[in-house]
Amino acid sequence: MSIEPIIRSVDVQCPPERTFELFTARFDAWWPRPFSIGKAPLAKAILEPKAGGRWFETDAEGTETHWGKVLAYEPPRRLLLAWQIRQGCLFDPDFLTEVEVTFKAIDGGTRVTLEHRNLERFGTEDADQIDKMRSGWTKLMDLFAGFTAKA
Image (cartoon, rainbow, N blue to C red):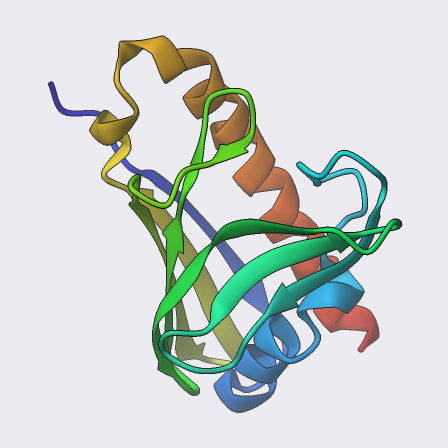
């Protein structure tokens, strides 16, 4: 069974270098607090800036909840993340789908494209999660675009 990847793009009025920096180094500043899987409210969203780095959140009680890891960190053009969250918002170190974010120079700025792929790895029991991710990634990309306009 194959499931179409989720692909979302936004155009922002910053050069690729700045856009990549805003997406990665300022990750916590634009990531919305309700987009959390921890047991307590989200305190910080963290994306470690290196291949092999962690992608996780820290909640208000100081507990770390992992989302995945950084597979490739290639400023200013590409970021590849392992998404390791299953149904019920549970981290599974043996599960992996990919979230690739690319930053392409366009006239007047950058096109930021997010592709979440390998969704068939979720299986049929996670169909609800895939539907939520389709709308969630759209919202996140729009929030990021709004953040770049103010940064």
